[in-house]
Image (cartoon, rainbow, N blue to C red; front, side, top):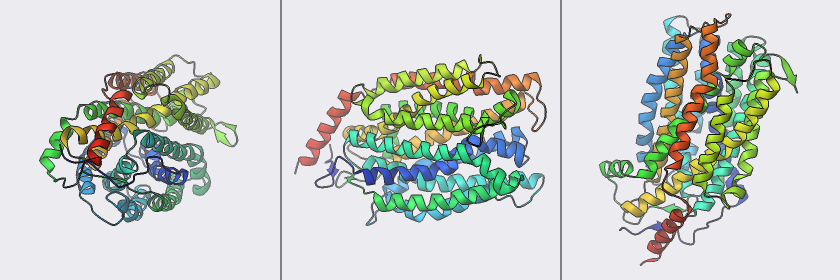
Length: 464
């Protein structure tokens, strides 16, 4: 076994400032990622004017290519050596390209016909490549902030508060900003709104760069070998299980988010009605869900000290699945009941995401103990590969299912189309959530095993 290397005198607990600064990186990520989840399918079909099936195919093609990029970026980041570390520098270098590509996605140069499709393919591919180049190192950073699994779990909690905070801002204000800044022109509204979010994202990534530090190093004398590292990844059973859990998780979240506007616009038919604090029903539904996710995160520290996070994540996921399933049976006029059930499901889902992502640091420790090589960037990039795979499936299935059920943008929908939107909003995502729960249940690294791994690595680091 190779010698483990942790920077001398590692600080296992992180300061509030560092945890908070780290969280802002996911706020920056979600200014665009949550916009894509919630609005992009709607934007392409109802605003930009692309056929739903064409949009679905585009999501499949571009995200498939993008998913392949993630492990490549992980390997590059693992081999990066700078005075700032391996992963932090990319937050500095890639922030501006990330912001520019995100803005171009909604810039709309006034093209028609096939030109729109080409522009969508090119700009979406560029954006997701920029997202990979900055988000793989950002996600990997969590694995080297501290050698302590508990400290990484706390950092993950902060991260998802930042992520859900970004999602909350998106769900609360995007529709209003699009209307106000565009003066009723949704194309202009999206362009100006996303320009603002682009600038904010650049600033937040730079703050994350300035406030964080890398403390965990690879084993001294570790040799790099792409074939061996990829082989070790495939042989890492905990990672394989988390891969499928993340695919199922992202699929049900993205599919449901992407048809939420369609659900309220074409099924409930009162999504534009202002109900609270200037927000319409759609925005209130989305923002209250994101707020409940954030509140759920605050319970993680209390819960994981008392309950093994593997069993906890499994139980919370299955409760979320039950809430999703119930939407198929809630009468369309019972908006208050929809809000209540969505808040319960979202409250349960918030801690699950934070707990699951914190497990990747444990998987990196497991891989280092088993194979004598630490590939933090590859493991976290592979986690993003699973996220992109789920997003790809959700985007493809969403567009194709809308087309298959006969969806027609900005028109009265047929009974078949309404039924399809209902299934995509409830039953289908619930099934994927159940699959995630099953994957988490068979995940092998419980609390006692993680503590054993930490002790073994600490022993290795103390050997001369």
